[in-house]
Image (tube, rainbow, N blue to C red; front, side):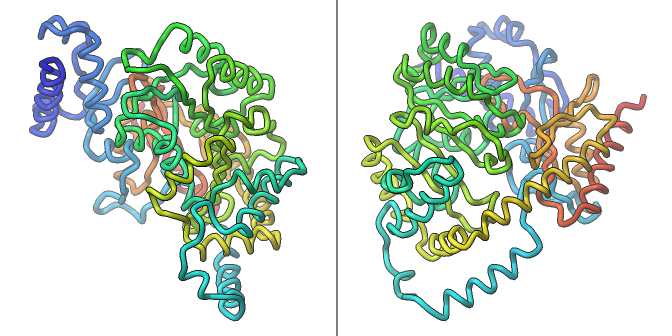
Length: 462
């Protein structure tokens, strides 16, 4: 038991030095081997120390450069904490989160509330519903997903579908149902911060899998399962979390051949697959979801936060039938069931085509905003999927990502450092993610992106 205490002693000593200012923002921590030699530690122990500092938002590892102390403000941005512009800055522009809400959605909501209040059984909204949702709401969701996938089995989908209180809640339910403390879960080298946060709260270690241009690399996953039982963690890998359709933040879409190879690896090693399709609605010609390729082992999460609105707090989780009892038990242990009022509102908009109309409009909006971003950031070498609501902007040496984020914060603009997405133990590429979905209009977005380009140019000047 002495080793864990010694490891935490080093973490707390370094954290105190950062808090006092003895290790200022931007200071480079010693190379891991040098730190290990100085204090008589194993290099793997130093890796844990630096990883814990990064988890607390106190340090950041940069590819090929080392590990650096980061400012508390930037650490908060990396942790997706609440953000506000610096005192004295202009009105804040949020390029950190994506909330693509169309101007007409407010009036649609107003009219829907009037219609729902004037008819129907309002008392049903005050009562409990089944853990997986009301059958009519599950049928409506299943019909919508079946149209999306081009398949004719909505009844089968409805029987396997659970209505959750938003995408993050669906991921929480899956961790509760599938994951065990101390047992590793495989994730892409860059993964969703919300999944990371849930895993940290449950002591579920995440093991990074290398990526290629299409996303998670099946060959790397196969090698990991054959030769690695979780990098020192107890137990073998059983669960893989992935974003094959419009990866966040890279924007890649996994080709069909790569999906089939991933399924083959999953069957070979008896893995469970979690397909998070939060942004999948933006890809009109996407390959089939993993659920259609491996229905016996794939869980798909389809949130309405982006295609409809984040305040709707409804997501559809489709699970293999054999795992439904575990998923239902996790629902009982979390929120019992999603709010029936919100579920019925979603059903109404699915049934009358409202959400499909919004998806068409949001695809157009995303393409327009990508064009603006490519123009404004032309000198920055930005990359991304042309139909996505986010874009990556590299931060070239000798600039540091933290300096760019802090400079933009001082101008009232929030962006996300890419290390927020880095799986534990992974050094993130030096880049920022610029979200395009939240600014209220194109003019506001254009002005904010001009500031991003100006900061990159200004900081590069000697």
